[in-house]
Image (cartoon, rainbow, N blue to C red; front, side):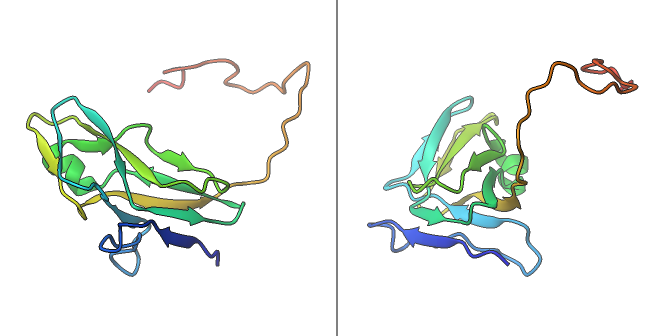
Length: 147
């Protein structure tokens, strides 16, 4: 089991730290730490503060993902999704939201705006070569496998 340290940033004592909302949830819900309500107009994107910083082991990354209810009901989703937070980042976590819906959406302080899922990052070594091994697919790209 990995240990992730969360630090609530000053002025955000009323904002819950990321937490799972059920026993088997994969993601930790993240709340908006806006100082006052923010309106997201259709097509508009804004960076929303979450009120915390964190430290995690180098074997992990945190992925910021949309909340399905906000996406389905209001068209609110995360850009750059999933957004990656690297293990060496120590600044405030923020969520890049966009309104793909047709109505303005108001983000209130403390509203659950995203979920954070932790994933392991494999140790990978990059090796420069002159030739790559052949495969049946080869260089066939987008739609090449028939879909």
